[in-house]
Length: 347
Image: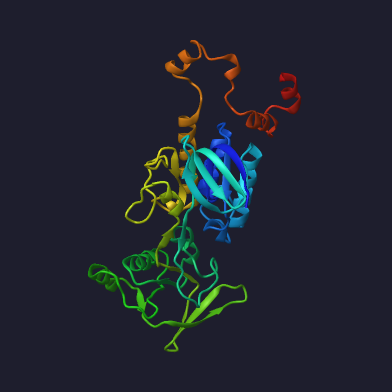
């Protein structure tokens, strides 16, 4: 299938909060930017938005993301709902991003490809209504409520103990598997008021509102829960980044500096695919820092002495402003900018 080829300064692969913020900054800072996003992701699964100041909790993940897409488009970014299949470096040093219906040639590429939580086997409640993946986002919901943690490793045991900060009813469900936590962790767990349930789950009960109410175990025991957290690890979406030589950390995340730079020139990574807290506000900050770093590297002015000398000792008048005609027109017409009448008069 033939695809359109478009040229950009920046292409962001992935459309979560970190990638969207990167695109927002690069576009507003005058760089022609594209985003290619296959859709879905952890943020899209949110029924409600927590811990994002200025965003009310009745906003769903999809609503949050759709508003962000509309914002970057309003500033002039191009958004493609598509799946990237290949990323490669070209002979002229740019990057070719190939998707099903579009190909971009770009100076900078930003991987915002995130990760997938490893889901336990059913029976399971609906995500957001008894099945939760973010302790820092959702523990507040379970103050004085019965909760569970699923898993057999150290992380599951520690999350179970952490939840005692919020409720005195915490069960750790191994679901018929042998515990794999260390002896030290076992000793700590024994000293905390956490019940370890080894039986597998046979079935579950939900209320009329769809929220989990209880699990029934294979031995016939019924235990009530309002919600809980599975702790089975993460699968990081790094294949595309690895294909251009990006280095990974031991935990499978992309290795980056404080501004999202990888070991590969002009290749960045932001959000859940990198180390750190998997939180929307953290992702927003990472995207902002990466966008600013790309701008500082890519901007035309100020020119250095060598570049100025190549132009005869002075920056040509027709070289400014450096922003593309397309983004310049969009900025002049954008709400909050100069009026259309003023822009026309200036022309």
